[in-house]
Image (cartoon, rainbow, N blue to C red; front, side, top):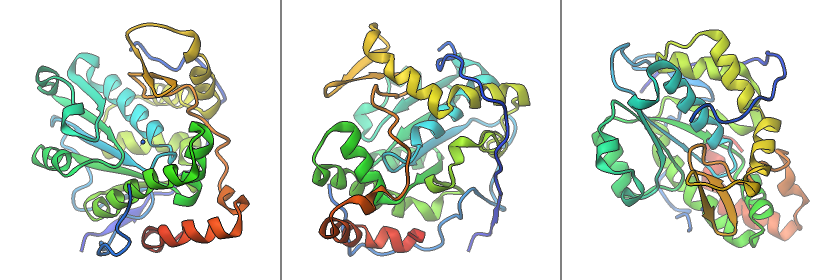
Length: 287
């Protein structure tokens, strides 16, 4: 069994809200076999936790929708750019192989892929290339409520999206060395940026890490997201009725109220149904 050490995270840093850009959604098999030995939150595998200084970084960020997975993706994207320059990096979102960028962009030395429910074919592709996984999780009942509220979709649909995410996270947990739990508010803590940089041996000075953290503070991302509907250009795309920035993967309704425990405001029957659906995941991760 792999050994893990817990890295405790504390908040610090001054408030600043510069521009976000820096140059540059069914069902889970509730009888699925339980994986064993997930990483603890913010933990690092002692035996194989770091990349060699000169090695390529192939990183996949996988999270439940509404678990601050986009924050993890963007912080890593900017850390990679700060370490190696943008021309050496390809970053993208993909749940299917056909969503990957053109082959010539995949020959770049450093690759960063953001994903949610994924697919067997994509996982095989990532595994064959030695991708390292960073996971983000949240109480799936809250994640489902958040998705329904922000995307103005029936809760049953949103619950299905989250079910797919849960299934994948449960499969990946034993092979991942870094996991973040939404309820710890890791995205409000500059130490998380430092932890990600250290975990992947990214040589970034503290002032740049602070700047990256400031760009992805909740209020800064909310302001950036709200401004997307007034922009136009090739760096935008439509996701249903909403606008999304293709580089950051931020949508115009990206930030909700960030509260935990809002599933308790549902009718008792719906609370019970969500708890039943997500029982394997909740037991697995202590919810």
